[in-house]
Length: 79
Length: 330
Image (tube, helix red, strand yellow):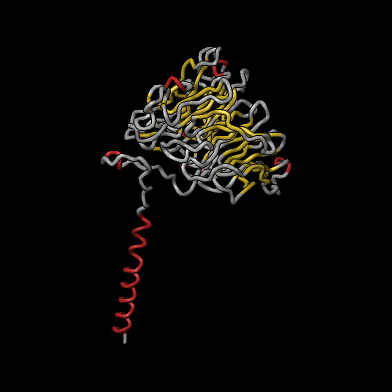
């Protein structure tokens, strides 16, 4: 009874993992945008794709503000 | 301000409210103050690429893919925004370059780009131009022709001439053609697309039988594929005098180029006759080790003279101010 139950649980877990794995793999690898019209077929050109922004805005403490450079006397802030 | 999804065009209302548009999302936001804290409030949603914003007579105008609508008396109704009222719905519907930029002209008309529906093609008569129309949507007419895709323009504070950025064609080469800054000195001028790029490169397919001398040359070349987008003349008084009536341009940054360019704010200084004297980087750092950590889209001069910059990659609005400290004699 215990062995049968364990075997059943293990089999269910395996089936669930098999069913979910392709979806999880797809979600972790975003599909690159398709080539654009007139795009050359060379390898170098073929690697160039539109740039998708992150799915959500960056948190305030992750913004690139500290890396932004301005002439002396100017300052940049996010308020 | 952080937490602004797909922050695109910026426009300031007459009472100082900042409005922010989307391109790949469907909303227009207002920045409101609630209990001393700035908050983002949705004033319109369910829209189709509502990239273009203009403000006139208390109304916010929104340019979508195929239409223009307005939200009347919006700054007095931020708590309960009115439904957008469509004033024009005759733009051609296409995905490529289908989003709009919009500005209010000195003649109280709305100026709106209608991009080419392709990378490179002979466009329909309805496309590849900047049009203008009355505030009620009537009398729509072309104003500047041969414009591949402009996502930024403004009017010179004294000459009232229209200056606009234009994104050059893709896939000719990595280094050519440049994006352009152009200047309209009379209605109906043709700026070359699709026959001539950057004033001196005939298109390899469509340039046969045409001469670049047929068209208006650019006022300045702004870098290959740099995606020069929003621009404003600096009309404030906070910045030093050398910036007065100069043009700030947001370069979104290239994507179809191995070594990326742009991802910055540049400043263009003009000669007294309106021609370009020089341009140089003003705010840099969005491009680090050939990767973007932010991508500027638009700029807006605030009533206090500070400059706002939108970033649709980080989802943020930055404020640039000047206090003069650190400058000799400043």
